Image 1 (cartoon, rainbow, N blue to C red):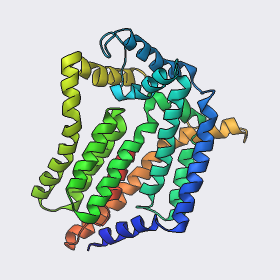
Image 2: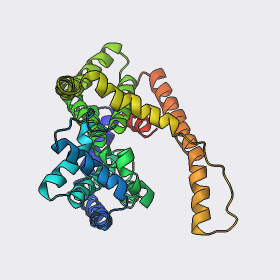
Image 3: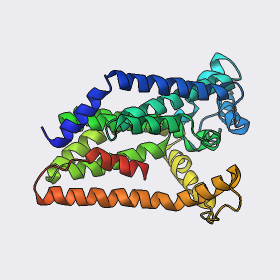
Image 4: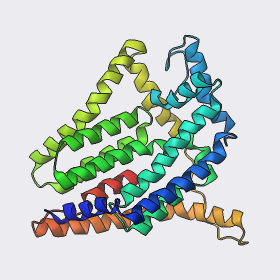
Length: 323
C-alpha cells in the first residue's frame, strides 16, 4: 500500500475515535446554535424573498428561465419550494433548510480536514466555518456557500478512491458534483477541476488519466443528461446557457471592483482593524495558494525523479478547489 493510502486510511479511522466524535458533537452544537439565530429573523429579507417570489410566479404557471427571471441553477429554488408549500409564504421553512445545509458544510469541513491535517486544526477550520462572519450569511444566497457540501462529498469520494483505486468511487464523486451543480455551479466546477488535475498527479500513464476521467465524467453525465433533456423540452438549451452562464458571467464582470487599498489602522478599533484585515486578505491569499503550489510541485518533482507515487493528490484537488 502506498504511503498516501496508508496516511488517508489512518485519517479515516481516526473519525471513529472518541476525540473525533467529541469534535463532531461540538461542531454540531455550535453550528446549530449559530444558525438558529437566523431562522426566525433572517439577515437579508430581500434575498430571502426573491426565491419565494420566483416560486409564487411558477405556481401561477410561469416557466423558470422563461417567464420567471432567475440566474441560478434550478435546484437553488428547492428549499424555497419546500418551505412555500409546507407553510406559506415559506421564509422560515426555507431558512431551516438553508441552516441544515450550513451545518452539513461545517461537519463536512471537519471530515475532509481530518484527511489533511491534525484533529485540532480540522476542528478550528470547522468552527470558523460554523460561526462565519455575518457578511457570509448575508451573501449565502448569492454565492451559495452552503452548497459546498456537494463538492466536499465529491472530494471525500475521491479520497476513498485514492485509498482503494476503485473507479466506482470516481463515478460517485461525479454524481455528487453534478448533483451539486444543480444547486450551484461554482464550487462543484472547481472541485471537478481539482479532482481532474489530481488524477494527473497520481498516474504516470495518460491511459490511466482517461480511464479515471471517464469514470468521473460518467457520474456527471448520469445527472446532467436528464437535466439537459428537461431544459430542452421546457425552455431550450440556448436559454439555459444564457441564464446560467452568460448572464452571471456578464454580471460578475460588470460588478467587479478594484482591490481595496491597504490602510494601516489609525485607531485599533474593531471597524478599522476589520477593514485593514479584509484589504490585506485579498493579497495574502495569493501568497498562501502560491506557497502551496510551490510545495506541491517540489514534492511531485521529487516523486517523479525517484519513480515513487506522488503522496498528496487529495491536497492537489483541495488546493485547486479552494483557489
